[in-house]
Image (cartoon, rainbow, N blue to C red; front, side, top):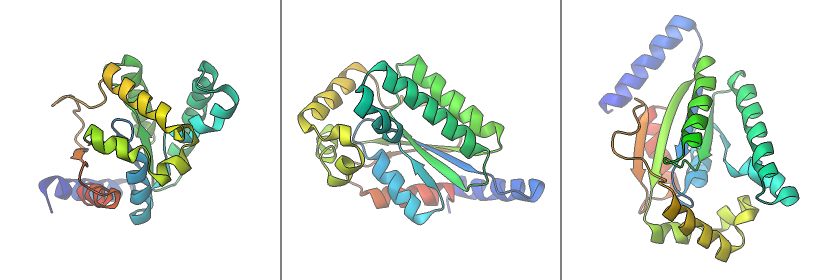
Length: 208
């Protein structure tokens, strides 16, 4: 057991003994497009009691009606906020949320802060998992059957590849060293790791 794992175990037990309540877990998995956020989150649900709410769930709900227009993003934001508020107030074990975080975009920083504040206000513990992978591997993962099944808007491969490269060129999608200051933070280069291997690393590191 690593020093961080030991501290997590001790802190969790102290909180349980003090309050009599097992704190909810909120795991934010972030990284560039097609890095494997959703797939890793899915694998993590298999070995924990966590539930997965990946970022495209709300997008795919409204895209058939409004495309990628402003109304889709507005309604998606409302759904996310309402789900977060309901889940944070429940007695569930924990939630995984996947997010494409543009580190050069202030609105993304504000969204992450507001979301974490919401869960922390209800007594939840926050865990950050950052994934990074080579562009060649990401382009391969962009075409996997599971991704295309879960995200219909990605089924136009030519368009999604163009969008992946364009977004990478226009925005910074991984953090700089020292930029993430949360204690429960894990960064993984998963270029050569399977989703289930990454899920195991996360579970073991944070004692989930």
